[in-house]
Length: 182
Image 1 (cartoon, one colour):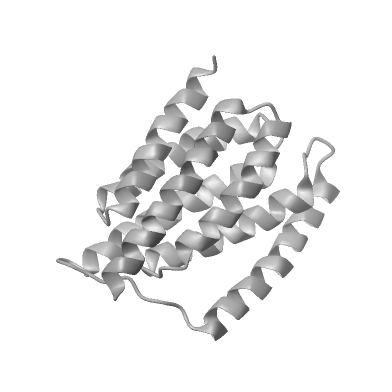
Image 2 (cartoon, rainbow, N blue to C red):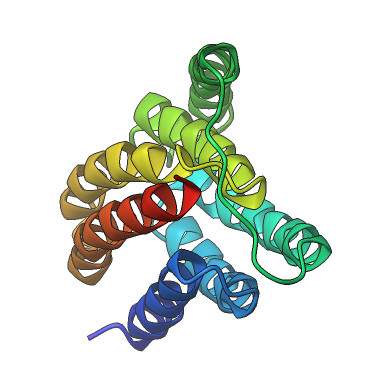
């Protein structure tokens, strides 16, 4: 058993759980989980995923400040169709560029284009979460389902199981945030 992966799993679960509860402490758990997974993904040849974890540390710091500005009870908001369309287009272009870059610079990279697309989508979903947009959860469901396949292929079985749990937690978060925004 890979104990690094176990600790990453525990901190990740707590981070997503507290995010769904709209508690600022979520971001602190996400920082620790991201540092653990940066190490794990780098050693698994998932370079975009490793780099993404460093982004997540910065995004978590942003999330702490963003959510603290909303002291008291805040309501999740819906994104406009234009925001969603522009975000999706940027994700596709950025994901392809990330994939091409990693394929060019490294011979030890796994699934460069899929990894790039999922990393770009994860950045966008994190931005939506920090901005308290309900759609972040739908993005996470789609992204996490794809990550399950990647992690199974890399024999990161605990992480694939974690992302299966993330799908369920994201669905619950989407329902909870959606109910509270009405």
